[in-house]
Length: 152
Image 1 (cartoon, rainbow, N blue to C red):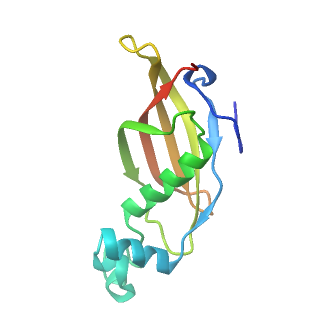
Image 2 (cartoon, rainbow, N blue to C red):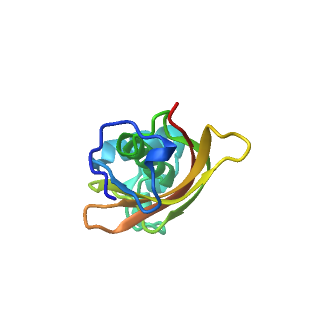
């Protein structure tokens, strides 16, 4: 089931394998790329256009961690779990660089739901979140284990 722009809070019992959630969009600009990089990933290919052209990226690229941070924001806004998006582990892959001017959105799909045997008030939900640019190209895939609680 597709859940675009859902507003009610969801509990473990509300989720089903195959459910999808689509985020709003976030446009990235040069200033955002440089500000994040200057503080958290100060490498030349994130900060300086000339150095970036001579790098593997062949142009200014956002830090992968910046892409993760944007993804997290979009995920929190589009996957309205009742007690928040509480991570319990994740795998990340970057398919291509995120660039200034890219408009990112996230499509998340519930892959599995495992109720806890020792803590019956919760379970682990595996969510695949694919971050796409404005052309529909995958820039990142985040597969995360998220704690979700049952309705009380």
